[in-house]
Length: 107
Length: 401
Image 1 (cartoon, each protein chain N blue to C red):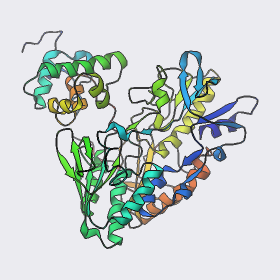
Image 2: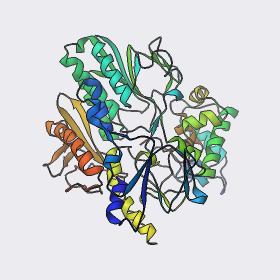
Image 3: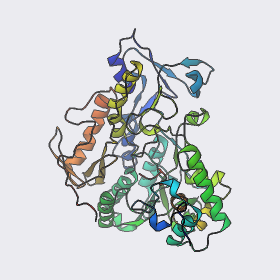
């Protein structure tokens, strides 16, 4: 993977201890695939993109990541499917891959 | 709480204060935990709302249809419009059992219960009385929930309850949570997991409930794991008040009000504030939080009306007693930055041990009910317990490497 000044490689991007990007603006599609691989998703499919893009766009529009419930209702991918695509915590993992902060549900 | 605090600082000719609520029954919600075990009666924990208000606060018992932010008006169910200079959203949360597939289907209120409302707590009391052995599963569907420690307390009290009835050996007790541990914050999570193990409660983590099969006695996760039960005690999904969702621009997608972490002003409009469970703050939805918020919020309403800069001092302070059964309890004290730490909590009744079981904490929990009606709701500060979290008495932890 080649990195340009505009598309920093994952190693050059600051992340928090849990692996979430500190600055969502540094995100790019190559980084997304790399974070997905780190988390055990080897094959990144169009369905994965659909969810990650929905998450990211919603965050950029509203300043908050959608909950798993609205993700299931509005992303076009049912919750059961989300758990297959993003094992364990779909909202959390899709947020991480989408380069946006951890959803606030968990306290 | 806020109405009472505001009434004390404003004369009646300075400000009109109206409280709108859908009913006139105020439930001391921490008491619901004890009802299923026969340790509290419903009549002891419910009081009329209007009686809790100071003279000079108008009480209207009706549903709110919606808030029109642009017109600074609250529309009531009967079409009445209440204009406001400042609106405080204090609606708490609404249980949404119907959001989980099958939860309200066969077995609901027969072998699938919640103790998070009055009828549920009463029905569960009868169900526990009739239960003489089998698999009891305690579960929370998803965060956020009110009082995140309550389901843990329920598991501890179930252990004690069946031990005292001499049936503990016949009861298999399992705690099923969507979190990756017993609790949200690491140190408390580790200690609470140890306590569950000591009490022989199996802990199942990262279990996101997709379906409740009441007829078949199965709890099924989205990733297709199953936990069998004979009696399920669940905490259903929580959302904000329905009218928040009906009010354009007021709530987020769960119906909670996006709120500034430190001033408690809503993100939507400067003359709207939110307190307690209605706000979307990343802190426990607990009564103590509301009490600590009240001081800052009251001051900020005053500053806002006087055209002054707001006070941004709310630090996310929360504390709660965690009932562990056999007359003992734990205490945790924390805020946005500091997770619950071990140590001692200095207080007017002597130092209380933090994150450790003690009889004194149990007494503290019982005393809290009196403070709730006589100090918290009337909107009084509790001497010796500040709105800001203090580090005194806490054992600082080494920085993680």
